[in-house]
Length: 158
Image (cartoon, rainbow, N blue to C red):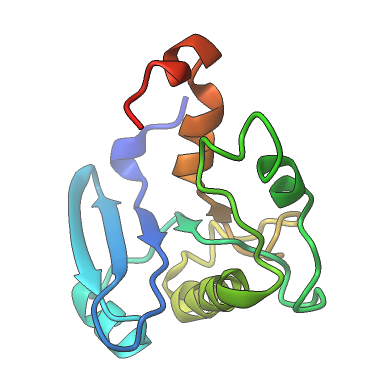
């Protein structure tokens, strides 16, 4: 069993505004949690993170693709979420054009920014979106949207 009190975890909700702080960050270091809001640049994000800690795992709320994939490759999961019954549940969008593509690029920038903050001893992942890094894509709106039963979803306020 994994003891989360001994693992340092990082979560980032990618923001890409250059004008205001839109990046939400939360972390757990030795079981103590904290959070901050930052600008999109690494200088500001780095100042708000615990300075000496490395993280075993990072969860990023932004569309992740391999840095070696074509920039405008379509993602299968997005093709599912933009259709019924999910299209009105989880704010779906496509990340291969427009604002979605900007968010995808910001997510990849975020991975590059935190790469050196990930514990190298724990980041020997052979398979995954970003080979060699324990980075996962978090998509809470989609997750919550598909977990709510139809009858409960129909009763929600509009």
